[in-house]
Length: 102
Image 1 (tube, rainbow, N blue to C red):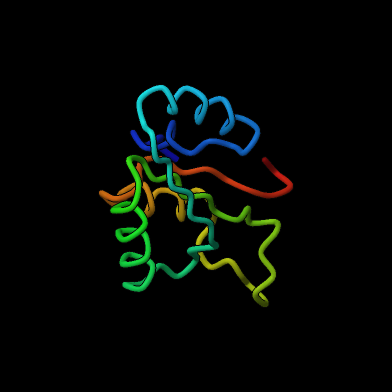
Image 2 (cartoon, rainbow, N blue to C red):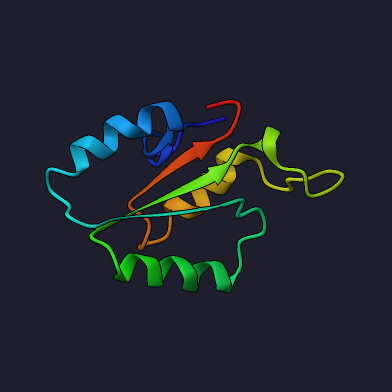
């Protein structure tokens, strides 16, 4: 699968602390939203846009595939695809992954 320009923006949780420490040098208000975001919809977009309006930089963390328990064949979209959708949003500055894999 080809790499996308967004790939470098999705930090595993163990690397997110270092990224945030560096970010604090330039951003006074750092926002964080967490969710599965498996079936991304307009409510998610509104939520993230409003969170971004309240911060200088918005980080969105997603739940790792292995930690999602929403039924058979879920998540529908894998964590990489979910991160790619989120990173395509203007409001999202960076994306991180939370869960056993990170």
